[in-house]
Image 1 (spheres, rainbow, N blue to C red):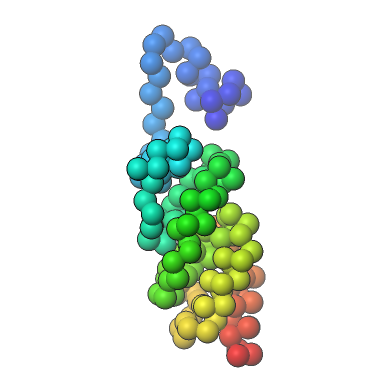
Image 2: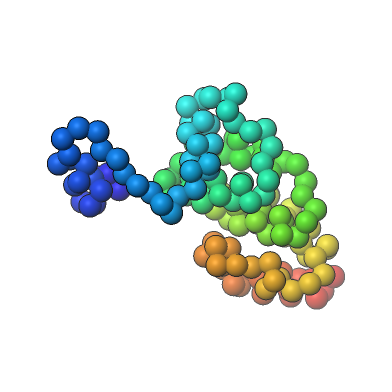
Length: 146
């Protein structure tokens, strides 16, 4: 994004002094957590995160191609079991972004066993952009066999 082939990079290079780049679509809190992890500011890294924040961090890390740099912090955040179906679906999406097969398996197994409503009710625009519809169908199919 800051390279010469992008508008932002071009504008930055032609700036006389400090350049301010607005990123209104980015989650500032998630970016702060990512920067704290990358810069080893351990006192600023939360030991636990709500599932919605885990996903927000995963989305931002995916956008800026730094999933690998924060994977150890991510593993600490998902270690605590979640019971709410909404949280499990958010963690499923985060596991997809991190390509974390074990976390994906655990979250979807818990959804199959404990969620009794429609998986459609748990989906949303952000989740649907991360989790393919085929996964929702497979969850429903698997639940039908249990």
